Length: 75
Image 1: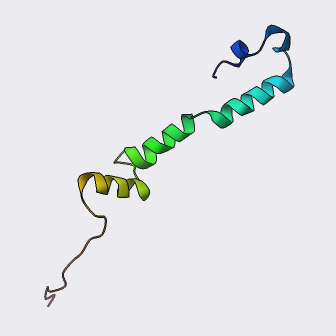
Image 2: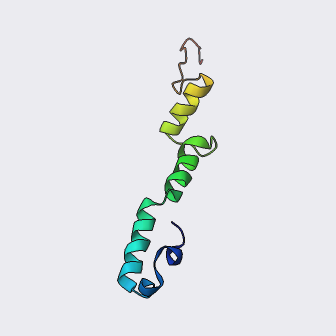
């Protein structure tokens, strides 16, 4: 419901309370921010964080844990 004017009957279109109520309801149910966050934090591998990296690790079969053997002589 992006177009509030098309939703409200003409006789109620000038009501600031009704328009504010519909706009706040529209903002609360809008999936735009969820889709943006999902893409940025999980789906886009360049910007993925924490859980998104775990998901990508399962997809490609790579763990985020790095195991290193300590058998190298430093001196």
